[in-house]
Image (tube, rainbow, N blue to C red; front, side, top):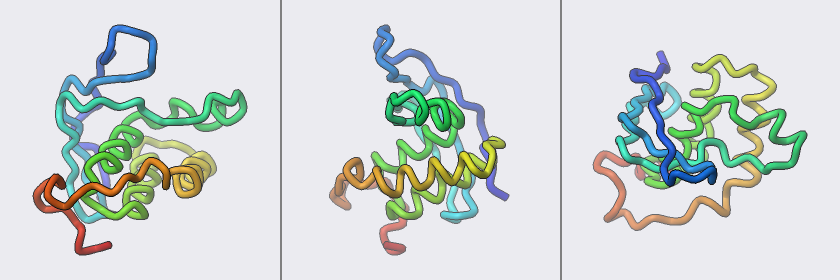
Length: 136
C-alpha cells in the first residue's frame, strides 16, 4: 500500500521569502506505482509545487500536496525512474495525502504537459544506486 513512512519536516533554505525549502529530516515514501521506497534525503532543497503564480492556477493547485511535491522534485532531480513514472508517483502520493481526484488530475496533467523542460538528462553515473533505468 502506497504511503509516507515519515512526516515532511522542512525549513526555509535561504532565510528569504523565495519559496525554497530544505528538508530538516529525510522524507520516505513507499510507492506502489514505482514498486519502490524513495528516500528524499535530509538537506534536499525543493520549491515544493512549481505552480505558475497565475491567480486561478495557483488557487486550484498550489500548496495542496507538499509531501508529494517534494518526492516529485527529488525524482526529477535524481531520475531513479522514468519521467512518466515520476509524474504518476506525484498523482499517487497526492492521493495518499487526500488531495481530491480532480486536483490530482489537474496537477498530473500540468506536469505531463509542462514538466518536460525540467526533466534534464542525468548521466547514469550520477544516478542513485538501484535506479530503475531498466524500466525506461
